[in-house]
Length: 291
Image: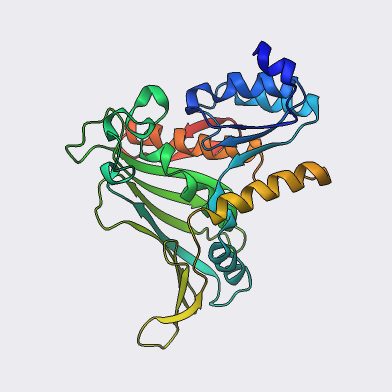
């Protein structure tokens, strides 16, 4: 870190494996360096508040790299839900999956970060984008029930599959939105889809194609509503621009460190629920409680 201190960076990207994020990020924050941290913010919640306190004391920006928020189609999907296009959201079906050996075909999947527990891998951590954007759209997660484990013959020491049920805090009528979220490393038909069932129809987002479909009440099929295709790197560029703008304008990050901590707490709650045969795990601040 002596070389880094002599260089005195004003901004940095933390992109090493998740278990090593906090040590580097805290040291940089103490130098007055703004941070863009690759998701997840860490491999465990212990110690994250310490980083956030350092960030606050140093008055620097800490942004977490949940870049799906910068997909124009996802932004529009969120707006359509908030605009009450198809009535009150009642239920959500969300899934993300891709066969792990196909992620980086030129390298051995068994030695990569995604496949190793000591590097913070596993389906829950690697695919936590979905947890972030669901809570971005529907609000705070109140409880989690889950099954997490391995169903394939992949040579990894982390989970290849996670099935979560998320209960979001009720906004009205004491009837919360419930989401069924499936994450996996096993499917060969790469998929990223979110379907929201509303009181007057359904809305479906395809994160691979940028297509939003609608099924209207009384209809007899899905209609293509919006097409907003994107290139893979566009969201990363948009995230970087937003990060630099956040610094120059001295504004709150769109995905700050506290948001990264909340996603991590949901991941930990899912793992605890799975250890206890799917019992609901309620989220209360920094603690969990069984029900």
